[in-house]
Length: 405
Ligand SMILES: CC(C)(COP(=O)(O)OP(=O)(O)OC[C@H]1O[C@@H](n2cnc3c(N)ncnc32)[C@H](O)[C@@H]1O)[C@@H](O)C(=O)NCCC(=O)NCCS
Ligand SMILES: Nc1ncnc2c1ncn2[C@@H]1O[C@H](COP(=O)(O)OP(=O)(O)OP(=O)(O)O)[C@@H](O)[C@H]1O
Image (cartoon, rainbow, N blue to C red; front, side):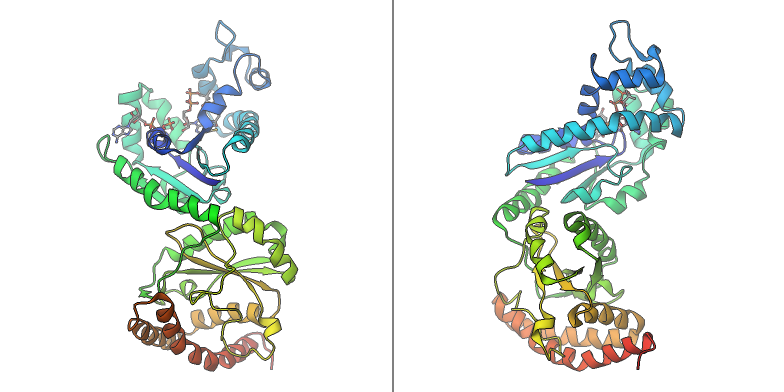
């Protein structure tokens, strides 16, 4: 099952997007709808609301008078907090039941207005944000849904800002255009990302990186942070730390568009136990030896004892985001080298440029081949000798940083 989070400010068009996704075959779990169910007449949710806000939030027929509750709940943080603390746990329980009942191969889209506010991004394989400027949202709510302007503004100001949503977004759908214009974006997302993502997840496949250098992308660190959040949820306490490593973690360094991450664990047995939870979270283990995934340990120099360079490697089922998640044992040379190499490049721009020149030469060498495996091998044949030379320099620098001889 592929779990997708869909969010956006009130009136941005989440319902519009979720209807399109549903028509393509997604299973939708709608938090607003569940929030209504859990406070229907006779529920413990409604009884708790009455106890907290008074019985004047009830209509004559005993059902919840939503406008009356909104008028009491959206006046300040304390009141809204009281409302959330009653309704959100009930929504969470019911959501878990619906997820458990969904088919194993579903693309499950959870429409959650407060996904960012409640820090839920790491629970999903992707977070989709529907965006419309706040002023335009107020306009649409007033014009098309008859919401009083004051109420629309009160609720929007109690929600996350566009910057906060942007930091959580893997996919940003702009719904500023006229009705219908977002459909093409949603259909492309379904066909080109969500369906192949689910297929990769079911079959344990990961997306391959292309051995081509691209200029440093300022989005890489934020992307890495979102991936780290997901890996943390999957690994729990087994991950002692998770770091963004490799070229994409060095500002200004051109790199292949593959994000390297390092999960540090206590021992290799722990790494092996993580294979299944990581796979379920969308990060299958790279079990096959391919040119893209040469048999570990990599030739990064200094492998006097290959036993202590061993690691496990996971990829990403997301077809649009290749990653290498290296699981390494704490204090083994490979684990320490990955962190020291990154810090060495970050601290020494002239060495970063030296490395950048080697990468360009390696990429030029790779371009002589059309076959993917041959191209990767050609890339590595230029890069690896430089690594062998760099290894002692990195370790010497790291020792000096720590005041070791
Ligand atoms: C107070 C209630 C009864 C008002 O009902 P009303 O019919 O006017 O609104 P509705 O439920 O359709 O929500 C419309 C939109 O308001 C916004 N909103 C609702 N609750 C909240 C909240 N607690 N904080 C911020 N925004 C909210 C969301 O953008 C939502 O999509 C209702 O919003 C509610 O029960 N809210 C608490 C549950 C909740 O947080 N729901 C949102 C996600 S689970
Ligand atoms: N591109 C658009 N142009 C103009 N109006 C739109 C557009 N897309 C959606 N709308 C209208 O804007 C309003 C809000 O859209 P929608 O209900 O999909 O938002 P929502 O994010 O689900 O809202 P809520 O947070 O209240 O659940 C609706 O009345 C909808 O018809």
